[in-house]
Every structure is written in structure tokens, then in C-alpha cells.
Image (cartoon, rainbow, N blue to C red; front, side, top):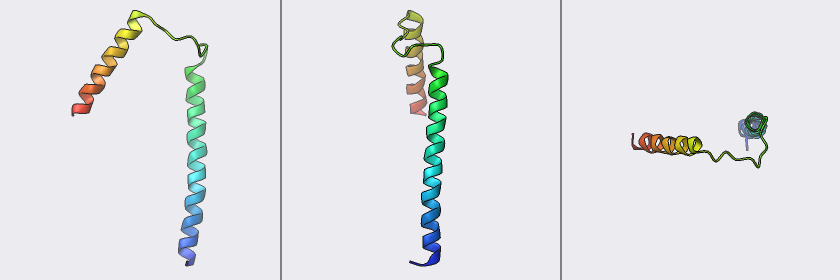
Length: 66
């Protein structure tokens, strides 16, 4: 292996670790934001939520056709 390959390998390892820690931190922040003020076991089961979920699924199917 030459020096260029060794440097590239080390850079890839460092960047992979940095990206993983950044993604983990971002997911943690989003998780905290989503569960703020709500208990994890409380799931909304209202008619409006079901209707919103159905319309979201319709839009997702429509987007998939494009």
C-alpha cells in the first residue's frame, strides 16, 4: 500500500465515525423534540388522526407514481 491509500483509508474511517456521531446526535434531538410533553405509551387514537394518516398515505402513493 502506498501513502495515498493509507491516508485515504484513515480519512474514511475518521469521516465515518464523525458522520455516525452527527447522525446519532440529530436523531436524539428529534426524538427529544417529538416526545416533549407526551408519554411514550400515550398514542392518539382520534378520528382526525386516522383521517390524517389515510390522506398522508394517499399522497405518498401518488408521489410514488411520479
